[in-house]
Amino acid sequence: MKVGDLIEAHRGERGIVTEVEMMYSHPQSPVGRVAVEWIGAAPNWWRRGLLFTAFSVKVVSRANW
Image (cartoon, rainbow, N blue to C red; front, side, top):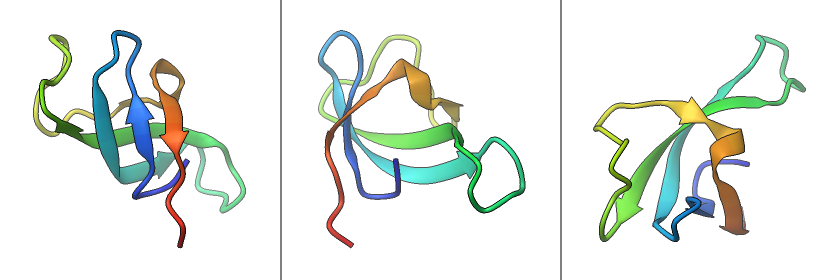
């Protein structure tokens, strides 16, 4: 998962990944948390500035860069 990917929450809300935080400081570590700018309605649990686990969403389309 990287910045620019289109993601989808479990109830169908879609958004663009704006920030990615790795689990560890190593460059090959897995993605830990992400920040998302939602397209249309955001999930009820979301608030601005929230970084949440990448395992709670799925990637619909990958960024091409």
